[in-house]
Length: 258
Image: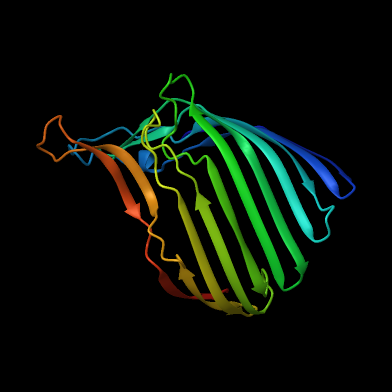
């Protein structure tokens, strides 16, 4: 069993005029792909493979401002930075993972939550991230790292644990992202909207949800690698391998809390 000591520091200054500043810094551990920990057999050859180290040292910090100077609106603006000693890289044709170089990420997040009345709320968040491998030369893009992300939505009716009818509409957008280290192949951008209506009581909840409301043909997962059949030798076919987004789907959900 691995062990890593992870000291952390946090400070909050304020509030002044319904506004506060905050600072976070700390060390931790990270594993960005559980397949590297659980895989014990090479699916291509059948040989046993060594598990990767699940506890990789990370270090990061965040500085931000949070304000409620506008009535009923909570806004947060933060700058963040994160370094990792190693990134696990997925080797698609082998169906395995290998420990890659270290990485550095930094960026900005802007989040807003507006609730002018009890029965209505609107929220939106954007994140812009610069992610690169360290000590990797010109081929330093991290496959699958998303440079721009948006998430937002609104809720009508009962919120959180309130009882009564409710309706939700949620949207999520991902920008195009590198699929290989030299950034010559990129994934598609995606924009998904989910909606739902339901009713909630103290210990149960029922809802009808519509996933992918606009029936968009986006991709949930994308990789770029050379694929080969078992007996093809060194030749193969370079292409993007993907899992498409599920088409418009309706789902009935019932929840009971003991």
